[in-house]
Amino acid sequence: MKSWLKKGMTVVICGALALGLAACGSTGGGSNEPEDGSGGGGGSKDGAGKTEMTFQIWDTGQKAGMEALVDAYVAEHQNVSIEVQVTNWGEYFTKLEAAATSNTMPDIFWMHTNEIFKYADNGMLADCTDIVETEHYSDISLQNCKGSDGKLYGVPKDKDFVALTYSKKIFDEAGVEYPNEDWTWDDLISASEQIYEKTGKYGYLAYLDDQIGYWNFIYQAGGYILNEDGTQAGYTQPGTNKAMKFFVGVQDNDWCPKQDTFAETSPQDLFFSERAAMLLQGNYMFLGECNDNPNMNGEWDVAVLPKCPDPVSGDGRATISNGLCYATSAKGKNKEAAMEFIKWLGTEEAQRIQGESGAAIPAYVGLEDTWLSTFEKNGYKLSLEPLMDMFDYSVQSPNNASRPQWKTPVADELLKVYSGDQDIDTALQNMQNIVDEAIAKGN
Image (cartoon, rainbow, N blue to C red; front, side, top):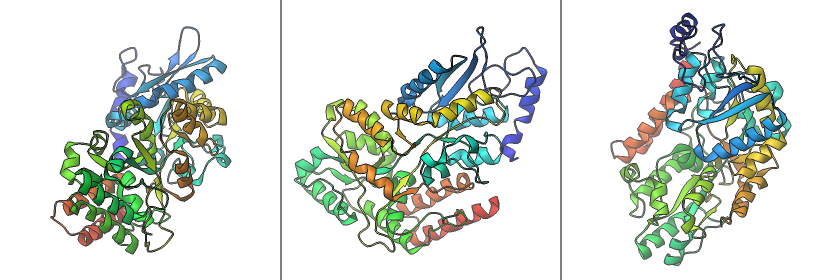
């Protein structure tokens, strides 16, 4: 067990010695310590004998959707009660780690691919291999739930992709045709140049991000971040080099803000204040943006990602796809009840409820239309249906057990390039070394 979990030993001892007092170190969604000192699910029996459980998420925008799932389940399982709790993204895993060390994790919680190896490989997540009906999910959705041992440590929740968001209003002002499925990187540049020349507004916002930024360009160009088994980086691959020089080079144009601008004003704020024409976004952002900007309904739209016109290999198309899973603690007091609930969350019934709530695209293959219907129902004018084709060429978000060690240092290398302190070829070699060394240390 890694050192980040060892610090919890004293907390567990504290809880065992102080029965009847407030839970010692409990931050994960429940204040009731089991009397045997085993920690666990943050739930208890209420006066009516129901099993009380907590369900921890990080997105306020999806709370109503998760509560709809709970309501449907509890209606058929009246021996349980489940409270959906929201912890913001910035604190979510800090609190979950603290709860893991004190063995007071929530009964049910969202697990992100960035973190799943840490929790699964340290024995903190229940093995869900036997409760997932794998035939209903894509390989990417299943891979997002796996630990290093290949077992499933969660039930697939949703799936996503990265798409091009553009302002119809600004394109109309500039007299430029809207993006379409035939667009390439060259069209992205040409449109940006024309928009800036005719309106003075920014074109494509090439802000520094991996999943919804440069990773997409790398895979379109025939490069990669990690090889297929995650044992080696691909930053020095020809396709990666090609894509990174294109992506970083975009900032040399007057129509793209510098990275310090994005540090002060988010790309989304620049776009929805009508100061910029295009940016890449995950589909999970669309519904919230529709809700937050009702006055702009019909003035912006989405399109498939422009493809690489001359890839080193492949057909030039790719979009990064990620997805969350529902998980429960391996040692939770209410583990049996929690496992029954998350098994149900993987059913067609539950995944349909999630989609129709607009929370996210269900991971369950064939239910994509349930998510689309939410926008139609609310009268939001986005061209979403063509985007579903991107699942045919989606690429799993690069991930391995050592990613927490290399993610930030890799980003720091790119910041040196943007600031002019380092050339791109040196940075790519350094990034290669950083990732490969992190992988070697973890083995």
